[in-house]
Length: 202
Image (cartoon, rainbow, N blue to C red; front, side, top):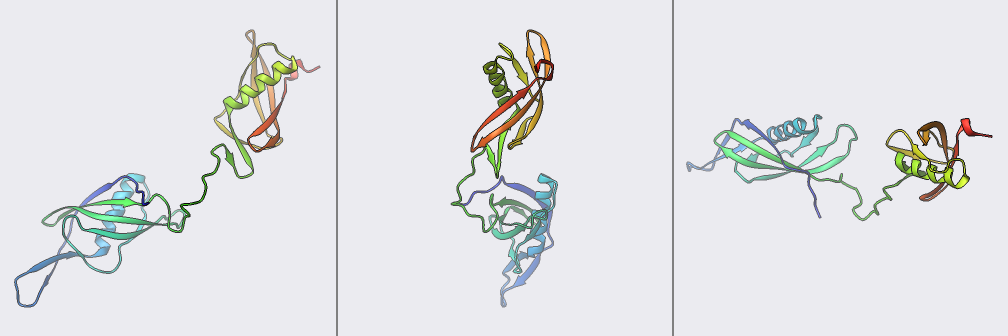
């Protein structure tokens, strides 16, 4: 199934190329694919702040409302290629508006690949500061170091592995203690913590 990012718009005045068919007076207005690609690049640059590279082929495009041109977008940062449909969404004389739909996944990406566990990066467990703090509170209670502690740890999410240490603050009865929280025994999504409060260490 093809999924796309939101439609983006760009408008420009296009110089038309007229092609006469035989001896009739029928005129077909066309525009070069480079001009359509340039409009699409303008729209995306205005939206995301980075100008991609778009290739809409080599054939002239009929200047007709509703015409959709299959193009190829290259991400300048990663070099990844994405399918991109550029549609002439509004044509009024030489005034043309295009809309761009870019596929969510780059070409060649496997759609059947399983989604990774959102809490685990490769070889690393990702824990929020609040998760670490809650585990540290339980460890202090279980060890009898503090009877009803609160623990505050800095930052947001942390990529942790065995030996990862975070400087936190333990609080009880209005008294604050510097607490060093070290992660150990990481196994999948389970782990242990060792909490050291130098001020209370025997």
